[in-house]
Every structure is written in C-alpha cells, then in structure tokens.
Image (cartoon, rainbow, N blue to C red; front, side, top):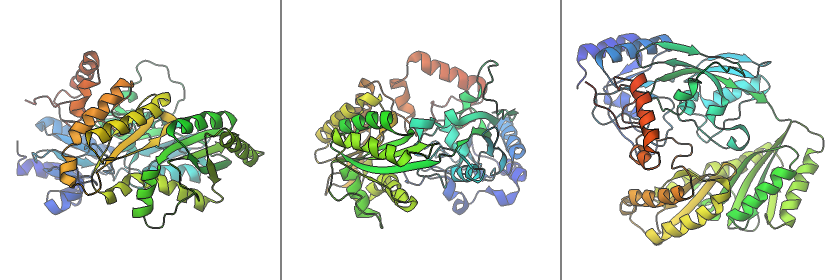
Length: 476
C-alpha cells in the first residue's frame, strides 16, 4: 500500500504542514536509530502538539488502515521506534507533547506528557525539593513516554524499581482514536484490572501513551558515591550483601565494571582518568543514600571497612565532591559507547537471578571466547538487580563485518545460557524488532497466545507499531 497524496494531505492537515514531513532530508532523523543498526522508510512523519491532535491522527489511520510507529526520543536499542522498509508506515513523534502538567509535592506525584525528557522530569522534581529516581545514560534525550513504553530500568532499580513501578496512572490514545484518561494519582486503587500495566512495556503496540502520573520521593539528605576494586564478580556480590546490611541508608546503585571495559573508556573517552592507583580485574560503583545526615559518613566508612577487611573489596575511594561523583558515573555511563572505538560489538541485554550473576559471567566468557577465539567479552551493568549487559568486542585485528556476521550465532549461544540460568533475554531494552523472533523460544505457548489475544482485541486492525514484539498479522 502506498499512501495517496490526498491521504497524506489529510494527515498533514491535523498537525499543520510545519509538523508533517515527507522529504527524505526531513524524515531522516526519525527513520534510523543512533547506532545505525536499524533503518527504515516512512511515508510521513507527524509531530502532534497535543493528545487531541494525536487522537485525530489515529482515527484517520484506523479509517484507512495505515500503520503508525510511535517514537519518543529515538534512543531505543532494539528497533522498536523505527518504521519498516516498505515506506507505507507513518512515524508519529511525541516530542511536542512536552509539558509538565502538574507537580503535587504533598502527594509526591507529578504529571508529565509523553514527550517530556527524563531529565526534565528529574529537574521538575528537584525544583519541588523531591526526587524522581529513574536514571539512565540517555536521560537528556529519552522521553518519559518511551521510558514507560519500554519499561526502562536504569541504575536505581535496586532501590526504586523499573519505570512500571514509578507510574500511578496513564493517559492513552487507543488504536481506534479513543482517549482514555487514567491519570490517577492514588496510591491505593483496588478497583479491578490494572489496565495501565498492559500498556507499560508494550512498546506502542497497543496504543499511544500521551501522559503519565509518576511517583516522586523525598530527596536523600546525604548521598555517598564510591568506586571500589574487587577481585571477581562473586566478591562483588559478597560486597553487596555486606554493604546492604551495614550501610547507614539504602544502597541505591551497585554497578559492576570489568577492567577491560574501563580500559576502553580511558582509551577512547577524553577527560577520563583511572580512579584508583592500582589496577583491578573488576570494579563496582556504589551509591548509598540516606534521609538521615547524622552519622552517615561514619556509617559509610564502617560499611566499606567491613567489606575491605573481609576481602570482598580490595580498595575503595568515596567521591569527595559532586564533581568527583559525576566523574565516577561518567566512567560507568561511557562503558557502552567506548566499545565503538574497539570495532564491532555484539550486545546482549540480559538478566539472571542475582545470585547466579558470577557463574553466568564466568560461563558466558568461556562460551564467547570458545565460539570466537580472541573475542573480548565486556560484561558490565546492574549487579544489584541481575541485569548484565554482556557485550562482546571483536578480536584485535579482526575484520568488523565478518565478526558482526556472527551476531545471531553468538546471540543464540548467550541466550541459551541465560535460559539455563532461568533468566531473561531482555532485561530493560525491550523486544522491538531485534528480539521479536526470539520471544517464542523463551515464552510458553500459553503466554504467546495470551499476548496475541490482547493485541487482537485492542488493535484488531494491526496498525499499532506492527512487527514489534509480535509478528504482524495480515491487515485486510
């Protein structure tokens, strides 16, 4: 199906021509993702200004059975926000839905539209003296609608949960163009099915999230950021248990980093420096937060001393300033991007039970290097919640294209290992197009059937982000 010029004109009339793009130069930023792994073509890119305009777009699309691809900040990593190559799909960018509608400090809630960046939500909470704890590397560009659509995780899941755990209510445009205003801010609402959770993590396949009511938290009065050396992932896990028990507050982040990943950062990211005087095979980045200032520094020092004395840690440096804390976090947040400087990288966003992380990493390294001799595994990530980004950098001197040609073979091996540990092949990035065909291998037939039935019920025309999560049905 090729969209007729008069239909394109009717879509453009909804947003106005200034926010309706058809020229290749104008649509280019919306049809490929930042790693250039996913590229598509769009019949049109629309940028609605509000929920009413979006509803009008969806009604017109439903009337003519036009496929719609929702897009936020275009920071996704599994192709969920990218149109296919047919050139028949319409990309709907929600970045103009960018208002903070309300901040209710006494109720610890905030209502933000889908196109508000995560950083803007954080800043609005901070201006009210509160905290919105979701944090990830792309927070300056990623939007809250995209965060909810993918059920984003980030670095504070250990203490606050995923995006799903931070949402109290949603406003939605459904696949027929109907608007559901479910922006409740109630902490207790036990009135039947929790419908919002159908749409969180659905990657736009069931409808458009247009706004969300979000949980806020009191800002910690004290926070300590520590980078520490540890002999192995098992020692790091032992340190987590010790520090979680002894810390004068809550362990909000506990990030694992291998020396090879740190070397890549130091080599390719300007302005970075080795945080400790002696190299270690592994490191952890620890953040401890507390609502109580009294005795906090002494308590942190005592918790670290216990971990050092027991050998779980071999060295530790608490940040002495906010600047140094940001420098520590910059090392961790640069770990993925720095791998580009070493050539091709085969990536896995997986999770296993926390207690199984050390064994999974050891077996994964052995498996990857046996499959591709000389390959350089770089497992890092959120040790506290079991989410490891098990990336594998090409061997020194290898030809990048030949290495990346082994992507599916490596994926199959690592995902098979994940399954053996009872884990998940998508911890926080979603399914999108990249993992769609892998899903039936890890979900039961009953689960797959239930998902297809939900999709068919809510989106019988199959126009909402077709080809993502589930294989598209034939549209008549």
